[in-house]
Image (tube, rainbow, N blue to C red; front, side):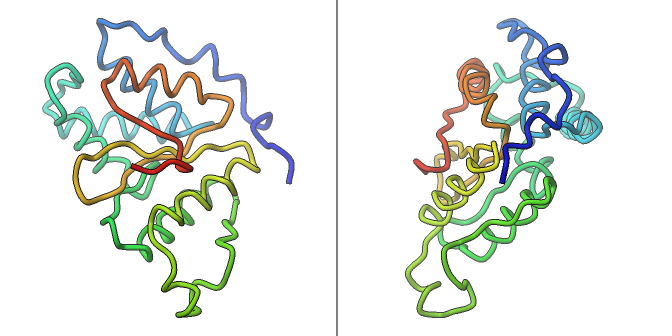
Length: 180
């Protein structure tokens, strides 16, 4: 399948500079990156995040914003699953991939008990990352610091921007090929 990232308008003009003094703008940029081509979804998630945080989105004030973001984007633009919950991970990634009419080839029949018994979330994450890269997307995961996996999907062309932005936000991220 061809890379369909050209189907989206040039997003470069819509991203604000990563101003180190404006945490809300940095969070907006993150939402823009994880909702490629869907400014309405990014705006709705940003509004929901602001509401959940009492109108103050400040990444400098601790990790509360990140956990609130995780709740706001869950199954819409991101995922969070227990470390051993392979079924929820597969369902979440399939739901997120469907936004771009993509299906993940997991390398076997997940309904086959013998095949599924050998899988864990990191192996599935790596497979999903590889399959999404074929279509111009990158699966990212962030360090939750607990027994869970969380992350999002963005256009592969935005990999450098994602790393720079997450560094400014203080969020440790890795591509899904290298899960925490």
